[in-house]
Amino acid sequence: MLIVNEGTSISVYCIIANTIQYITTHTNLSFTLDRTQYGTYIHDPDPTSDYEYNVTVFSAQALANTDHTLVITPVGIGGQNSSLMLFDWAMYIYESSGYCLKLLRDCLKLLRDQSRNYLIRDGSHTCSHLRA
Image 1 (cartoon, rainbow, N blue to C red):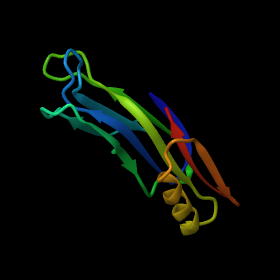
Image 2 (image 1 turned 60 degrees about the horizontal axis):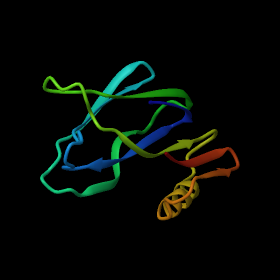
Image 3 (image 1 turned 30 degrees about the vertical axis):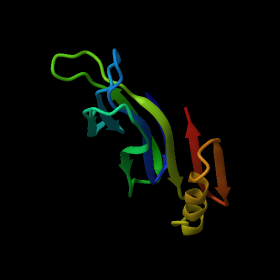
Image 4 (image 1 turned 120 degrees about the vertical axis):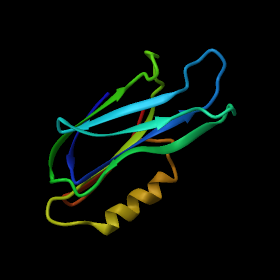
């Protein structure tokens, strides 16, 4: 999966599955930000059949306020060739002349209603909520 954005931070959220009969629910994600390996997220399913929503699988702050490219790659482990990735949503903050706390508060309020997409622009600041 490829996410291209301009801004000073980006966070990615996924739905995490646990044990589901006949389905691979192991999650192993690799993140490359601006062509640099930036870490991994690994979830080994527990014995329940519960789903976990709004799980932060990646977050990067204090980025240069330029264009960024984030590549998310599902990676199999232990000889398996499969990994489950259920992208839920992503949020990024864009700044042009300084940090806007009001915008961040507005974004956090909207996160309570995650059933819709939105894009907030406050002067030169932008916050978005993208759903799969």
